[in-house]
Image (cartoon, rainbow, N blue to C red; front, side):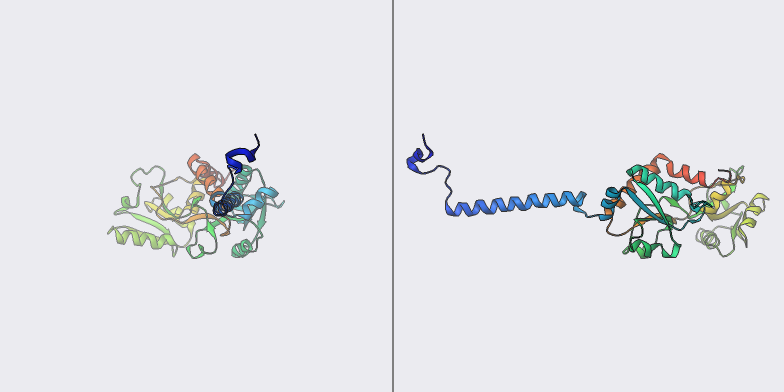
Length: 285
């Protein structure tokens, strides 16, 4: 039987003119949805565009900007090789993503401008978080806290927090952040604590070693240097302030930032960050 013979010669699938227009609009709408889905896939998760991440994957190269003059975080040896805590982290990112790492050595004051000029993809250089820059760059979560800490002698089990210094003495470097913090903590808590300011960091440590003070207050970089040199000191409680070091990317690199944060979170949980920091602060590494 021919299709013309069905239902008196009227094709059963023939669409009325009005219905045909509706069908055309439905098909057009479906096409727009499909096109939008393809665009979404091409831009990455959540429809975000990240040309930096795409280029890193395509070329197989991660460009890292740093001022390699701040050991033990970053330094350059006589053969122009890069070493340090931040260098280790950069290389771990490269290994994680299966890409080569290229280091670009720039003076610290020029790091942000060089990032904007696309000289490199990330800043990884003991970079302090700067809330005034959050519209210009995107920061990772912290991978190191350089804030103020309290140290006491290794064998002194009585001091485990600043509050344990009532009636005691704490040494600080004159005019440093630790000096102001010690006075503020003592005043705010109504504590009878003698703050002993001296001019040189070596004098601060000497007073503690000689038993002239009960503790010293300093930044964590200095504290880890003392510990790494084998000095008979220990951390007395948690960090007193927060001064986070972070990684910076351009604002148009959300996927790259997400990948960095995933790595930092895993390294924090596994203890890798602490292990590498302690390694680089050891004097005899």
